[in-house]
Length: 247
Ligand code: FPP
Image 1: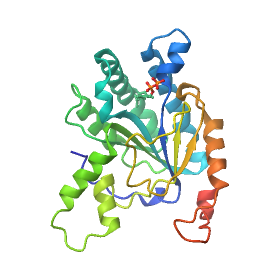
Image 2: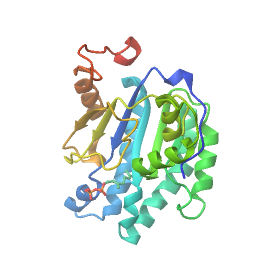
Image 3: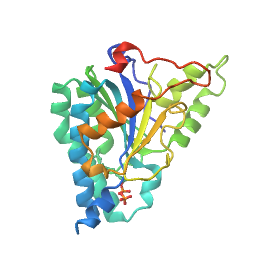
């Protein structure tokens, strides 16, 4: 079950929507002789850097893939560690997110999350709901195919269903901008069930950088590559970015 429909945030629709598959935490740590969990901890630092840098680089919506519905298959200790990191992140970050105008929403299933995390998510979303500088979406227990399936179940019986109305059901958000750019770190080149509906025309950027090393310069590089591309959306003419998006 996905979270319920969120209201539109008009001030944010001008910025780009960037999705990031934060990959490579485990390898980063193992190469340094550290535990995989230490890699995930370093990954949280990278999240902080990117959230801080994103608004100045013309990003209005940032969707981060923190835990896929398939990640439950990992060893119990790693899953427990990731959930603990999420709990700490929610508790420690909310105040600074709210202060910096960042609206946080969490996408994905909540009913399988351990002890109190679903409530902590609800509180964090409520505390940051007026943020208009950046919309930060964190995907937890997330599967794009399940999101589409859930939307199809909700859409059953709706007459004259449009793509836009269906998008609202998939994303849980009224009028969410389609994803412009999906970045995946660590050299892997696949989508792994991430934003399959809303990323239908997303540009893809793959970098060798391991997620714990990713910083504002890496984000700038990905966006520069994105801005240098011609987006035609199936037509013959390039569709220009609006001025607000080409910051
Ligand atoms: C992929 O690297 C990363 C994950 C499955 C977890 C991402 C989580 C974080 C960055 C931190 C937790 C998030 C929050 C919001 C608190 P991997 O472990 O698959 O790396 P590998 O491919 O090198 O093994």
